[in-house]
Image 1 (cartoon, one colour):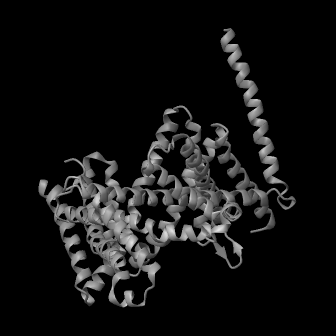
Image 2: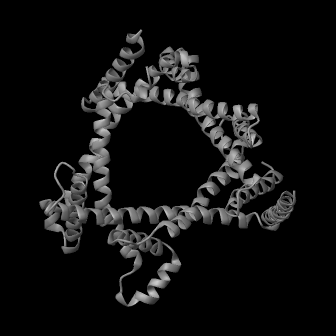
Image 3: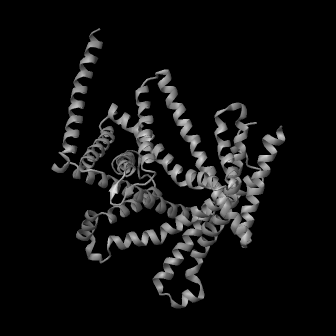
Length: 222
Length: 244
């Protein structure tokens, strides 16, 4: 049974990993076809992987309603929200615009989903600022540099900041937008490249460990 | 969609926006209900995307056309759902190993070419003979700053040698470059969130017009009224509890 439960899945991981890796470096018709088919397969498997999250969410909220835990009524809104989005999507066949007019799905996207997601993320603007104000202390030169970079970038991107800069430091004949551009194109690139390099090395090593079966935590317990 | 539906949409959007913003004052049932609605609507949105962009065109239609090879990824995908049944949850390993194996095989060469080699190429390219012969002083200086900063950041992350002497100095310079990057990333995030905020305020302003029957004003007034009433009723309840 260990063979079916453990060895075959690990062998599959190795075979798919090596074939995909090899296909990238051996450009011919067969490898191109392989990558095309695998890309389609991956899309399909990833589509079903979404069901894991969906069922997990539904089970969690269904149990809250069934046990009538505190605030169980709110869990009903999860199902309401899901149905409000899915039923018009099915009746509209997944199309948002029918000519120049909105379909049910398009209406939902514009007035419901867009409003909800936009507001949910914009609320974070208040929290980022208030948290930074409360938690950020310039106690070291490094923290000072971090603050200066953030401050210059924020000031440089709003018209009020640009006006203030012109009034106070206009005599230098260096615009704040020029400083922001230099900041983004020179020192920030150096910092980002270092981090990207670290991520790349980490990603490649982890990928190799997965292909060769050294890293297998994703398989869960036996 | 008729004009009535568009006006109704304005009321829905204004209401949901204000309900979510109401959390800035304090936690309340309107926020909680809208938060859960967002969770469900988000899942619904992804569901319909997967349905109409994956399951129907890539599974259902090929199957109807007699292409039974799509059953292989379908079975692998469905195997993932066995996670919910502990006795057969091991079956899900087949789906996971496919995703991990294929994903790793794909990520390694892409990361190697984009995040690794191209970054090194971008750092040394200003110093190639063809570039140097054409370049002026400032681009060369900027290129030197990027190269020096990049090397210093790498030194900061290099733990195989003890950080003392020149290595320590280089790693300290690396920290400053990292701080500049983090500061810029923070500033960009703040500005991104604020641009979303302006968008929501713009919509609220639009829905406050006569065309939408002053949706924003009416809903905002109703919310304020709710908070005032809830404030006094909760105080009354607290006083009664104290007296008891």
